[in-house]
Image (cartoon, rainbow, N blue to C red; front, side):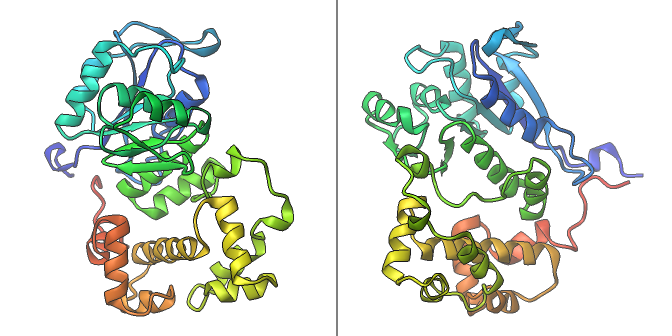
Length: 328
């Protein structure tokens, strides 16, 4: 039997519940990280919800959540998540701001959902960084915190500190955190269980402006075609399949998603490569050819730029021959 000292400590996620916090944003992180998913991986997270002062916290709709260990719990957290604040014009408790600064300084990962970005900005954690928040509040965040580069179009941002756009975009961010920690296969399974796409196409720009109508949106079958033909797919091929010009396809992608079809196709290739690294013994060169990146050198460069580690190291951690961290 494996000794307790040989078992790798699980990643600790602490969710901070401030008075009046919206229930939905609080529930997103609790659903993703607080549900026991050890049947997927033995490395699943340790999770706790804490109040600012350790007392029970009344949140939206008169619901109370236990205060738990309070802010001292942040001292042992690997990830600290701040959900949306009750209202953006109030100042967060100074004790919370100080605890967030201390957690960040010692190396904890800090993330905010929706208007929780205002709390991180008040703590000074977003100064000099790119960040996002709900599109309705993006101008206010930029006005009050000019040292922050606010991007209102994206679903989430990682610039050392993580921030997400409005409400449901917090789910996209949380799934990306799982993907970074435990691999694409685990994140995809969590997405299946929460009945949500592993990656939503586009950013919140599609919600912050009037819908352009079906004819102005990339057709779903074009995206499906690209997935089926990933080795050979090109923007021109996607446009031909849709029966439109490449210029029109590019405009439609930008209108709907805030990015180009080439950028979407590139991310599709890298995410597919990650899944193949996890689930197969194919060589890096073979995977590069299968996903349309051509050479192992090209895959290594682009994969490392997106995932932060080269393909071989990613496979050592998440691949089919990776040793489980807590096996009897």
